[in-house]
Amino acid sequence: MADVADLLDPREWAVALAFLAMLVGLVGIVVPVLPGLALVNAAFLGFTLYDRDPWGWAALGVSLVLWAAAAVLQYYVPGKRLLAAGIPSWVLLVAGLAGVVGFFVVPVVGLPLFFVGAVYLVQSYRARHLGRSLGSTWQAVVAVVTSQAIELAAGVTSVVLFVLVVVLT
Figure 1 (cartoon, rainbow, N blue to C red):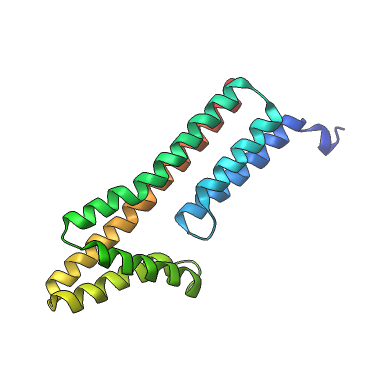
Figure 2: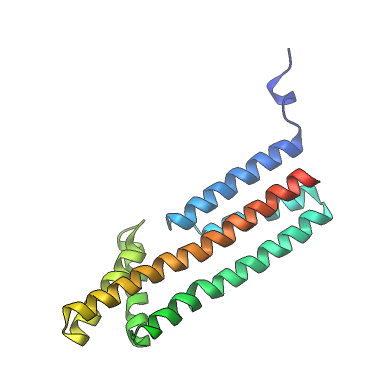
């Protein structure tokens, strides 16, 4: 009868641990408690340092470029959309600060909740019109979802790259 330790060789343990950490990172993107993309890339780096395969290093490089692109795009794309919808940049700044406060006040959902709430309150005060403030609030909700979708797409793509490296090498 084989020992449990003989069932997986060290590389398989490294793959399993890295994949588990990446899944936790993906959950951290959807539920903003953990720095999701950072965790995905740290797991990828840890596996690549262990495995030392050139294809792994190349895929890690692509993953890091995706991380950088997502870091820019997740603020640029929604911000541009909000500005096009007529929400001034100072409102976005106030909402962003409220989101940071919300992150610490209500741990899991505070950041998007306070961001959207601040857009509603400031736009209601500014426009003094329920329809316009609700429209702005909807745009803020779409912006939050777009931002998370961009980050999640980068995370899932990095995990797919990792799986390709594991399967093909």
